[in-house]
Length: 459
Image (cartoon, rainbow, N blue to C red; front, side, top):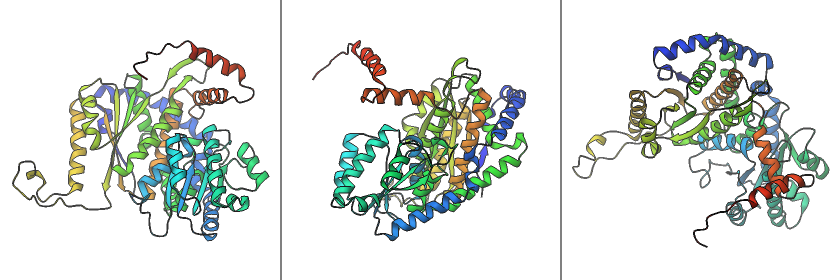
């Protein structure tokens, strides 16, 4: 039971293989740097206290009364991993029909007024539990969601603040931040975002584990799969470290001009894994400055495709457009269901290839067809295969990609763990919302917008 990574199509011609060989000292140095740093997120599978705290809190929540709806409020790293897990491991239509005895799960990762307004109008809060996720509590989107949720929950509890607070769990910093102060002052129950674990690397902490436990997913399996990858890669020789080879190939292709990195998921349930990867890869590797302080403006652009859907929307570009992309095809070896295509009801050339076949066969041959088309067009493609779609393999995927991201950042000479560009956007939003201390920044931004002359087509 392991991930299988086939890099054959990524290595391509002899020139790329020679480049890989020549760059191995650089890759090994990046690996050594990563091991020397020993980031906290890589140790999460061994820190069992976090899972235990989630299990204890979930048991208390469910014992207090029926929980038919579990709501996650957060954005970015506080939401994408949760969405990936739910889409991969929960029943396909869990928002309509969850697993027996489990709540429906909704992950609200936006402040779109139509979406949130309709949600809180239509979803009853009297049997809901809300998990608010923000390490600092300073994320303005999550704060606005929290206030809206509190208003509706308080109404559902007939103004009883004690009853309303019991229906919230705040996942935040243990000691600092706005949400920590709110929790301590007002008595909200909390779970920990561990020190040294950034949002996009937090899915195996209580940020993701509480959702997994509340939804009845195999949280133990998630951690076991991640731990297996951690141990195997740590013990491997550099040339056998799959994450290192994946990162090195992508960095070299990027430096050769292939700056768009596509994850092509051939399983609808894996589609949100690609969304999680997009944040991990983009926010970690897109940087203005290198570690020397030099302005470099580097970073790949991650992209998502879902097969076979996007064979009919993107593959034309991939096969015949500019050769500026690298492709990772996510393959699922065994689907949960075997669906036979019914016998044709009439004779037709359109039906003939389907006689006696299954959707499982069709999915795999579509995937192989895309792989072949890309390879024959000279496009670099690798295949990452999950033997089956279970928590163990999803945990392996999370850890593999996190480690590969760290390696890639070190090879590029940048810090893969900061996000100053994101912080710049947060500061701008706070300024425009009238936050005290940001008046000068607000004036600068308003002056910039005042210079615009939009072309109005109609009103």
